[in-house]
Image (cartoon, rainbow, N blue to C red; front, top):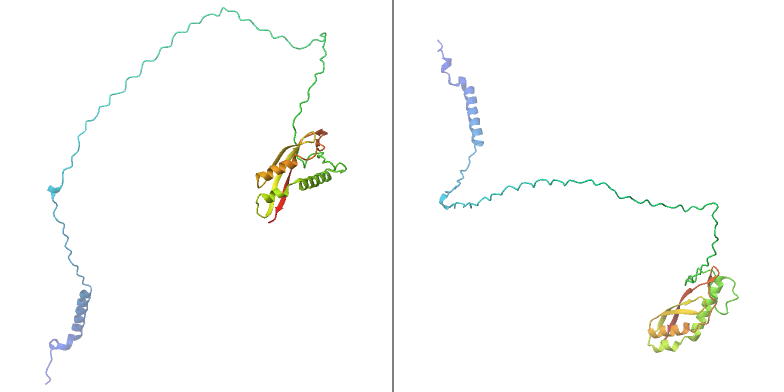
Length: 242
């Protein structure tokens, strides 16, 4: 006769169930342990508020000025009554006579009025004048350009002949080239006037003016057939050697 076993009394019957429940509990406990957070308690010292240390703010009491109301506007001015007076004075009318001539009125002939010509000092530049001034010895030149060139050559030759070169050496100038700007005017009669000179030394200017004053009388320049004043300018260059 076989012995009968009670299945409820078997220990290993629900072992897999117990294992699963145990594993679930361990995993749950592990998860909670890992995710557990702790916070440090910070102590904040609020301190004590001393109400006695606070000073009461004094609010000044000011007197409110009472602004008086503006004065009432002045009463409107009543305009004076204007009296209308009849004008008894008679106004004399001015009669304007006509200046038109009548056909029967005799016309008086007016004598010719002579107009005096006023002479004016007219200056015409040397390079645009119709008839240039003529230096003595240049009368045979036919064109203005040839007369200009002839005049320039004659004046340079005249100055080189009359200029005192020893004066430039006596002034103690350093070796080199120097320039004197000279200018004069040929008036309506052909005379040389208004002489000017400017150079490196006043004594050279004086010498240049002296030479220009010795220039001969020329034929005056003409503009529209009338003698006019003609300014003329040119430079004088000289060299000083040691």
